Image (cartoon, rainbow, N blue to C red; front, side):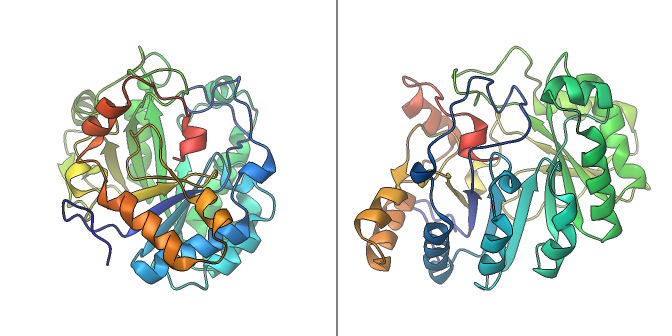
Amino acid sequence: MIYDSLGRKIDYVRLSVTDRCNLRCTYCMPHDIVFAPKNELLSYEEMLFIMRVLQKKGIRKVRLTGGEPLARKNLMFFLRELSTYGFDEITLTTNGVLVYDYLEELKSLGINRINLSLDTLDKEKFNRVTLRDDFDKVIRALNKMLELGMEVRMNAVLMDGINDDEIESLAGFSIKNKVGVRFIEEMPFDGKSNDKSKNFIDYKSILARIEKAYPGLYKIEDAASSTSLNYKIKGSLGSVGIIPAYSRTFCSTCNRIRLTSFGELKTCLYEGGGVSIRDIIRQYPGDEEKLWETIAKAIAAKYKDGFEAEKENKLGGFKQSMSIIGG
């Protein structure tokens, strides 16, 4: 097993497979983003090498993120290979635009849990925020996920004046649908700033709004190392979660590391830089010992929490957007 210096067991890696997306949501992908040349990104073979080493050392769960993972060509080749490595769980975060045709194969590979990024149930608002007329594709994919019996978590980043008027209706979606609707505090990862935006809504305000709309709301048990505070509306099929991403109430039990599509290892979402795993494996091809030595050193230096990481990073600002870091 892998432990950091504070004794936290690290068994979960979030792997960003691309810096590209097919939507242009302002809070995670600035419109002036410059995509990287292909040779700067990890190849699938390099990712598989890293994942094999991590699995041997005790990583049990993998989540694929982006950008939009399916925006990368031949992703299913990668997933077919990864599914043979013996991980306890492989999950996928997607915006739902491209995923419909792959859902049955994903389930056959054991990828039964999908995190669907969907900030609004209003088609006009969706088109305005994403600059794409793809709402119907996303809803079609969501319905098929439910038909297949997949475990769906619908993640909505809440922004005051943009989609905060949907808190009640989004939460209510969990009543008749077996979906975990999760509200996420907006984070300052737009590639430009350090601080929370003018649209920020804190998790306590979100909870108060849901409690007022649904007096029968009650707390349910959170999974170990959960980033969300989880609730159910009385009589509902699904659940409601709130992720205090900016407030960072979950840092003490953090079990995650992140690997960007550039091969940068981050032990905290709020840290500025990271260790270049890409450079190590290209300098020492096939050297598992050298790779693990680098990863283990980074984990040993993992920050106490996101506030400590942000303090260290304050002078530089958050230069990377969420599309690069991974959701």
